[in-house]
Length: 243
Image 1: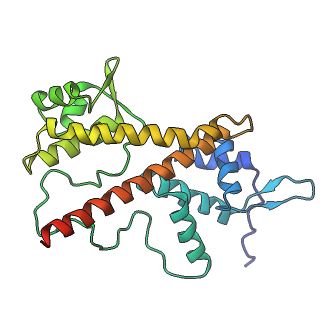
Image 2: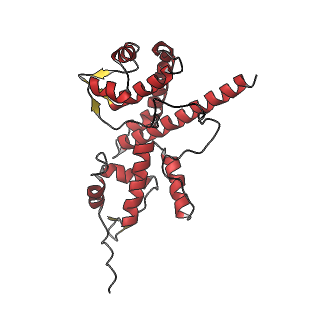
């Protein structure tokens, strides 16, 4: 019985066609950017054309899944891939190791069954879909809108509104009112402004893929900012509760 022939090398367009059903936002610029970051290294033909193999496609799928579903920064994804290349066991994307910032799992969690730090997909929700999806009532949604935490765009809400509403509802079980969250919103707005300043030089570039690279940089900075915030809050709480 003859061995099954290996699949012929694929062009970047072939790879795009394979991945797009699972990742509708994937573009050729995105693939080139991930290559420039060293996350995938396709072979090159003598004339310079990229030649992707099945392992390259699987590697891209791993990166895109880690970004989309778990919001991992590229630096962490690169570390996972390098560990895999060395033959080490790597946790699946989004696996969380126990640490000081982990919540107390002895406390029952009733409202938030999913990881609320993960971004919602790019969707548009009606008011009823938002209420049902977050498990909140009209009064809470009205207060979230009043204080600017949730914003309606036309007749719909973006996917992030669902995430915000879920977290606000979960915090409500601990006695938080929407007015208490104004400081969090103000801090988030300041952080957005700072990130915009950091990526502004990239946005001014005229090179191909500049906006894609700026978006990736902004996402990495945002993820790191969330980690820093969690670490600072954890450190502050330990100091406060130890005294």
